[in-house]
Image 1 (cartoon, rainbow, N blue to C red):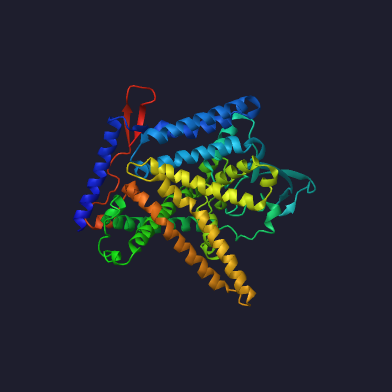
Image 2 (image 1 turned 120 degrees about the vertical axis):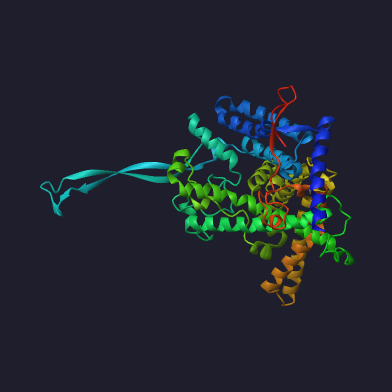
Amino acid sequence: MADYAFQRYERIVLNTQIQLELLIQQGEAKPLLLWHALLPLVLPIIALLVPRRTWGWLLRPILSVTTLSVSLEIIRYRRVLLGANGYMIGLIMVWWLVWSMTLLVFNDVERDFRRIVRTRSTTVGDKTVRQNGHASNKEHKQSPVTRDTETLVWKPYPQSLLPRLGWVIALVLNMRGPDFSFRISSLDPLPPLLDPKHHSAIKKPACPSATIRLRAAFLRFFIAYLAIDFLKLIIIWDPYFFGALSAPPPFPFDCFPAIPGLVSVYHSIVSGTAVYFALQYVTSLNPIFFLGLSSAFPNASRALTVTPLDAPWLYADQFGPITAVLDDGLAGAWSKWWHQIFRFGFVSTSKWLISLLPSTLSSHRSIRRIIITLVAFGISGLMHGSGSYTQIGETRPFSGTFLFFFLQPVGISIQGLCSRIIVTSLARHGLPPPRWLRRFGNVTFVLGWLLFTGNRIADDFANGKMWLTEPLPFSLLRGLMGRGWVCWRTPWFEHYDDGTFWGRGVRIL
């Protein structure tokens, strides 16, 4: 059984590679070159480097349109196998459009944004000169003592080019803004020196030390690595995850079809768990790499950048506390527990759209909340639906992936309405529900709603062959089974040249 499953998996991988090359040869798809993928990243940096008061006011709209054109061309024609069978290409391109508009159109970064940087200051003190423990002949004469101290300060948009380059690159790459003034609320509190007005009233626990944060990151990485290795094995055994949606699960799950709906629940749970650990695996690399290296080599870190990379408050966990699901239900699951990488881009887009409404509507709190919620899930659906579209397979970007995300605000509304009705009714009869019962109800609804809607995105993942991706360089389980220890066996890049300027460069395979 195991040999057949691995042979089937390797055959599907090979067939997908052949399918991509045939699509390119027939002109139905084009290869993606490395500089194509980097261009949407570089263009906003160039636009932000030019101050608005000079030519920035003209350059930024032009480069925004150029970024849009390049991204749409990539989404429409360019295909790769890397990144979950091309899924990440579509997702990243749509997100980068949103992020570019956030920085170039929806906000005035020169006027409103500040960055936390490390700076050195010199203090001069007095010291009495003493000899052998006694005051010298000129014991009242003071000698100046110069001390270099390192502090953190808020730095606005720099006026000189070289500091501006570092400031802009840090801005473009910091989507949660841990070292910027737009930092999202779920991050760790700032040091009191930087945020004195909120320090006394802060309700968050103190930020862990660098050692504790690194230890936690390594633990998350290790657990995620083992979990992905195990889940990948389950996925290889089950043909469902490669597009055979009607195929029954393998042993020991072959009894599930006897219970209606259980197979769908099983596939949704495996898919959701795999996505969760994949995110934990990737995001744990940020503190491991940056915090670990800057702590090990502090002098090199200070020489390379003014960002305080060794500050542990820069590396807040990507996922919030699970108590958010217990206390706030589906709304808490998405807004507090699940990762908030894209939060500022979503909120900025929402606020910009709200600013276009008449004041009678834009000032209404309920309308603002509804718009922010719909925009956030709408953009999420568009991003992930675009990822579905750029995969090589028979996917359903709209009716599958997009609809999954757009159904989440429906579930939030249903749960909020039901909670108000039930709690009000019980309280009216002198039976206010205890906390444990409210939490049980929240968790039950969240699990039920996610399983009810989850098959849409899980089936689309399977149809798009997302699970062909190999996130781990080495597999402990497959090595012990004699299937080889190394997972990354094929190259990721090759030189490509179709005779044109746009078609010449390093191809992403």
